[in-house]
Image (cartoon, rainbow, N blue to C red):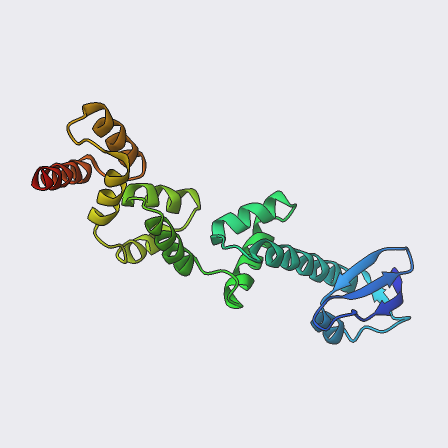
Length: 209
């Protein structure tokens, strides 16, 4: 049976990083510390093909986990979006699924928390529920997390009133009102919500007069 000699085994410069495994044929693998311990690797060790394949799979998994950690550092992604990005970087669907599960287990990935964060972010920016639903869909957050996240939203009146007061100086100017109304609908508010906001604006305008 053909074997390959492990020419050099080098520990990482920083704890927790992969070990460098150099083989006699020039192949270099970056292998997790746990794999080094599990296989009791040592310099000069003769590796059979089955053992070598296990090391290669472990090295591939470690590389993908590193890519996942890099993608999730400083930003949030849904599990589906992460899998898509990993596949684009060469991972198989099975590998991408395994890495996304690992990311969830260590707390790097949380679709429910991401849904809540997105809703809070876009509501704070003055967007309505329909725009926010579009964002949840676009970012590929499972629908099972939508309802609870959207339930945290307050009434839209304040956001609509603030927007209209900044954009409409004369509630009787139809062009101004239409332009502001169209903009609010694009921001995710329904026509009925916008109409009620226009009515409040006109009422307040008449009261001030």
